[in-house]
Length: 362
Image (tube, rainbow, N blue to C red; front, side):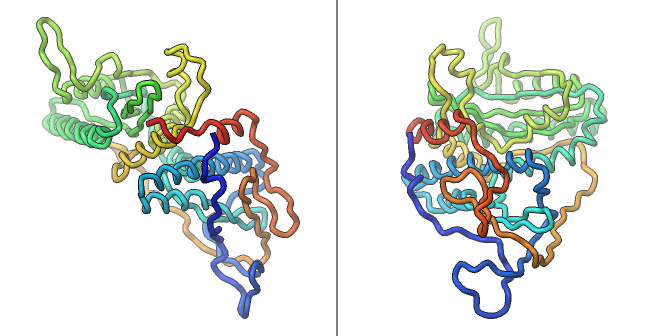
């Protein structure tokens, strides 16, 4: 299903922040530019092609999100989505490095990938010292969209209470210290039209994992029932603890921006329906709205070494301008028409992004 957003035209921003002196003709590329950061090495074609792929996915995705936000009359969110659409629209290449402006939105797949790589670089050295790493999933029962924001708020408060309670026990010498990282995520079930918010956590031992699971179930107030215990908001069987054998893979799974763009294939396996994967734009917008203001990823019980970000800027005079045109798969040289990465999307991805975006289901 093609969206109406595909036919829209929006002003393209650029990154040239310092132009040459004198009058500049319309469309003329300035001879001086101010860039920041280390830049991206264009000799590494695979990472660069992956960035073009993410640019394509983000563009198609946010155009549909813009349609949804327009229908809801959410002007602020429309602007945020446009910012993601423009992320790296225009770049310059100088001395083998690509420079551009990033939107830094959590729903931008380009910025999310950069953020993920940076966090793995920061967290891995510390967490690699943990001896018995465990991957934990703490979840609550699925809910409808109108309860999602409140349910996420309850989850954050529940974890804070667990952490504070265990911290006091530990300080009194009556319990172990809770240590780990946690990430808030939410999936959408298109069959039931429900949302499943949950935590993914990585902790240093089975003991910490078991304590978290026990306290999580306790926090959600079990209901006594004859000779058993029932839970209104949680299901003990849905709380998972798995030993981690590849820490980097576990970190990648944990450090996300809060929602999967594509539907889970397991949804259809369980129902035995032969339905192709889809992007549920309205459901994704609902999740992003519910997560606004909440901290998605956080650590607890330990500190990281001091981290400094390279925010240095420099003036470049020898550069080429490249633009990611509408309906393109790659950056194109403004002067020669040459493509930067040579990326071409697989047929399946192209079909998914052009024909399988659902604007109604939520």
